[in-house]
Length: 209
Image 1 (cartoon, rainbow, N blue to C red):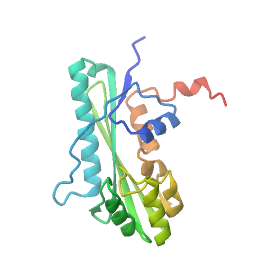
Image 2 (image 1 turned 90 degrees about the vertical axis):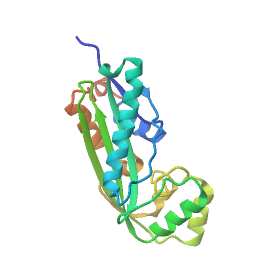
Image 3 (image 1 turned 180 degrees about the horizontal axis):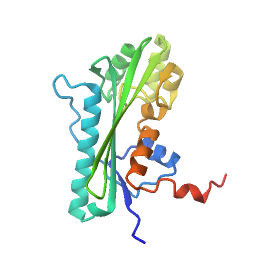
C-alpha cells in the first residue's frame, strides 16, 4: 500500500485549523504564506479571493520544493474577502479601520467570499470560491464602542469575527456559515475527496465523547 499523502495548510490561522479539525482533518504541516494582499485596480472581490488563495498555495509549494516534499503533499490555501458591492473591506489592524468597516456594515447586507486553492501531489490545481450573504442589524453607539474595545476585530476581514461577539449582529445569513468564519467546509471537503485525499478515514475511529 502506498504511503498516505500529507496535507499542508498554507495558513497559520487558528480558525482554519479548527474548522478542518471539525471535519475530522488534521493538517500535517502549517506553512504560513506572507503575501501582498493589495487588490489590483478594479479587481472584483471574488477574483481577489481566488487569486490570493492561489498565490498562498504556490508560495507554500515553493517551500515544499526546497524541502523535496512536493510530490507527497496536498497543499490547501484559502483567503476570505468581505465586500459591500464591489468595495473590498480591509483586514483591520487598527481601531479606526474597524470602526469604519462596522459603520459601513451597520444595518445593511454584505457578501463574504472565500477562495480555496488545492494543489495535488499529481500537480493539479483545483479552485473554488464560496459566497455568503450576511445582513447586520443597525449597530448602536454602545454596541460599536464595546465591540471595538473587545479587540476581536483585529486582523479580521471587514473588522469582525462572526464566531465571536459579532455573531449577535447578524440578522440574516444566506449561504455557508463556515465560509464566513474562514473556510467553507462543504467546498473544501469536496475538493479533497475528489482528488483522493482520505477525508473520511479518520471518521471510522469514532468520537469518544
